[in-house]
Image (cartoon, rainbow, N blue to C red):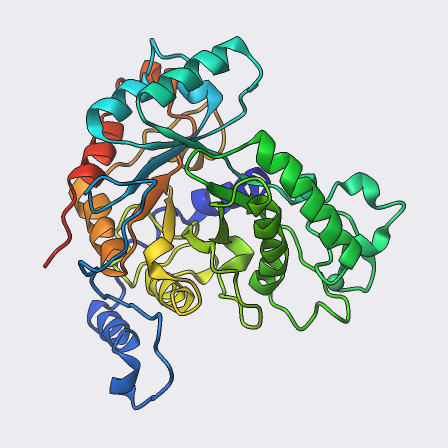
Length: 391
Ligand SMILES: [Zn+2]
């Protein structure tokens, strides 16, 4: 998410605290309540299967063999850099996980052939912590070096020119074959112990506007690739599941393409504000994304993807975001345990979501040096572990 981070950091700094006061609470809340009334109350008889706005999780929810404990939030994860977690004497993520109930790490930037990594991995394994790898992957699945020989694999921009700046043309059989082949190779290299895989589109990159692709929105185009990637992953990991990331340009749900049953929703509300919970629906984040709009988007996505497997990727502890992606000027994580974090957990639980992870980038030795031990990591872990949904 780095390129978009740099651009958005300017937006964040510019608009950071400007929108935290509800301009007209009563009206905004009324709108929100109306938005989430069941469709039949609005006189709409459309098919609501899979829709679970504000719903509750029932005891019939299927068990998850990968996350078998009886906690409400089955997956309790963090996504961080190798430089954040490798210096265990400064900040011991593995010890925190063991003691407070985290069970999944996604770690970027590690040399996985190094002895240091192998030791770390073995400690994770002993502690029962799953390893996965969440990343933007299109430039690896469809190497840009192929552009000179196969421009048709790549996206057409809005001016009608094939360009290799991002993503690709999902209507190109050759591009899909390349993605399939590379997904097997990369998937094996970054094999997940929880069978979850993440091959996100390029961060903030454009999609294809060729004659065949222009009927598809960004999420549809992502799904065409993802439906190929999941088949590729199944060749070496029959239990593989694959994320469809709702983030940046894929915040609109897919309209035309049906996801493979083992593709799960990953909801990443990047444009929200963390000064307020999502339930403060009037709060306006970047690019016009109010919290109400995010909840509507989540609800709409859960008409396409099952709630039982849906996952949230949050930023409550993402100090790269709060520091404007400047590691030399770390800011303190604005952690609000009850008012934001627990309130958000109530919101996510009400949609039936039981898989949660969160960026923890820049929360490493330098953070500890500047601000002391990040108690919010313990709060996050134990808050997820001990959570019980409201009756
Ligand atoms: Zn195309």
